[in-house]
Length: 347
Image 1: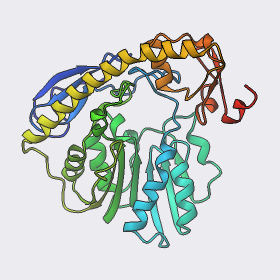
Image 2 (image 1 turned 120 degrees about the vertical axis):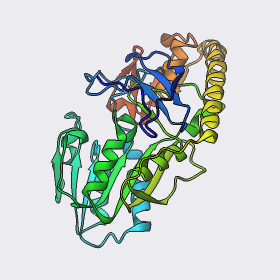
Image 3 (image 1 turned 180 degrees about the vertical axis):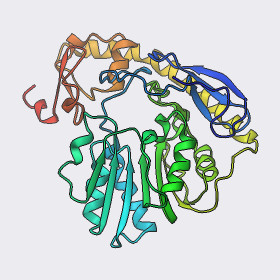
Image 4 (image 1 turned 60 degrees about the vertical axis):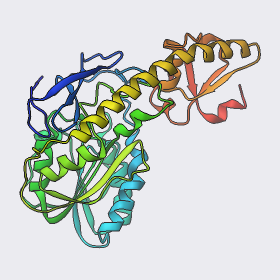
């Protein structure tokens, strides 16, 4: 376990606690850097023991590991806009997970080869059947490659997990060829402003919480030039493309506007989430009233958990629980079997 009193982006000792996540199993507190506006959770836990999979609506959610595949199409579309995928290329896939990106990228890039880095032994070997693919089952912080080996580095929903993402970005810069591309995808703090938020967003697995501006500043500080900024209309994800440019430059200028916006988002999030959690009691009461018939809930994830733990819904009142994806990873939720959509007819 490692901690620091300095911000990972600007290196200033300006971190102030602003939020305590509900249900944290890692004893994390969200801090705001009063200098640059980056939100980050302390302590910066490195190499913590892996917990079991959970779909909790609180901060201890995690380790199901199936969400990255939903972002593959967007990453490949971005690469098509900035690279000739017919050319020979060496790709580093950071946090390759179940191999969704590697599999689909190789299908559209016939002359490319992928090095997939994934520490989770439960899912890493999903790429074993892929040609032109080398698997390294390790944390990206523990892997070293020669200078200028890769044409592309792809990192999907990984940077927010790292204890020291600035150092890892510097390594991405080092192993990329001049003019090489970096594709980064991460959760967006814009979601904090959503009026309908219920689940705890500041989960224990995420140590950094980026806005478009703070993510771009961190990437730029590592020596990259952002050539495609995150889509302003996407309030859930930050997908950017950057090119290896000059030497790394520390990001030290203050950003009072980002500080104010981060504060406003935290306040809105706390207010809206508290109101929505309180409203779940009425929802649970209505479901109980309807249960004289047969009530099935579609969606076995974090909202369902919050409906029970915060709303007080009695699971035994339900006739069934349906989820398109989650049943493959969590067969049971609060005593109910997670069934596929086709089970509705049988229920």
